[in-house]
Image (cartoon, rainbow, N blue to C red; front, side, top):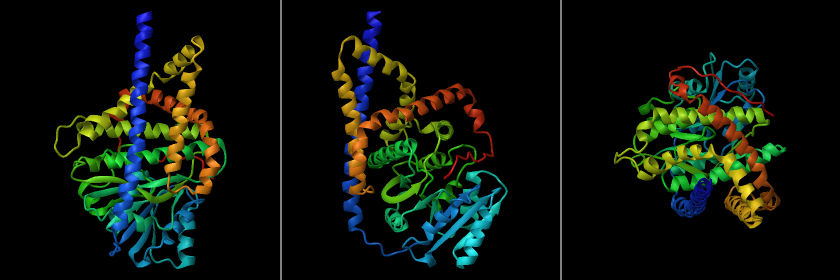
Length: 418
């Protein structure tokens, strides 16, 4: 019994140490990214304005679609070098009417509405990109999201590097009130700070849907999105990376700011995160050759470290409830509340540093949010609870993973909008 307890204690210590190292690397990496990107982009003078296409797939988005379109057309980018393609994927509400009415009333020449039978988001994106876009660069924008006024101008700077094939935008949560909205705001702030380090270490493998931008010529080469996974964005990113992350780059643009709605209810949050988790496993299975690949086209940090580490983290997370109960038991038995205080301070410090480092949050808003940082230590366990549910749900279905990617048509998984 004592040997088992000793083993469990050492295991927790080792896992905690690894997590501390990971958090430290992300903090340091994000700072170096900010410094290097600032120096690099400051020296660049944009002389060319490439033709830029924005594709907005939409399914029953009559409430939000106009704000998304408006944010693109009001970007400080030449209108004769910009187009918006809205792909109405068999909506049963007034999405098509709302868009068409907006186009006619404003006499907007660079807005196209394409309607198709309901086929799923990936099919809608492919239809818009393949058949209707003229741009050298193509951005995907969700219909419940919108761009900051300078997002497009800042996007094209990154593509002056000819190795860059895809860019992830800095997605912020739209403030709407409620504790779930607040939790997701902090979550996105932390997650997108981490993307700075992932870009610096060249280990990024997720170019998210909101504001993601691609070279159309490269999309043509790899035949656009596959349509047999539930997270088409992760799948496409890994499809790009199959060319080798030494030869092509997928990067994060911290100054390319987009905004999206948060999920409003726990059931919807579970549905969303389950789709993300299951879709990631699908993409990993399809691209399993990248794991521990010896090809010289890949960096070892991606293939031998980060991708396997993602799966290892899920494996360790299975035991998370046992870890928590064990630590609480030890603290109570040995009256060691200093350990609890240390854990609390480490997590709070990490959240604090990520908030302070986020350039897109105003100083005024930071001062408002700082008092909430200690509370987030507890509130973020709501996300841990959700993540645990979706992990268990995914593992219980893991034997169906291979079969799941044989499907050729996927439907939308809608959540409530405000």
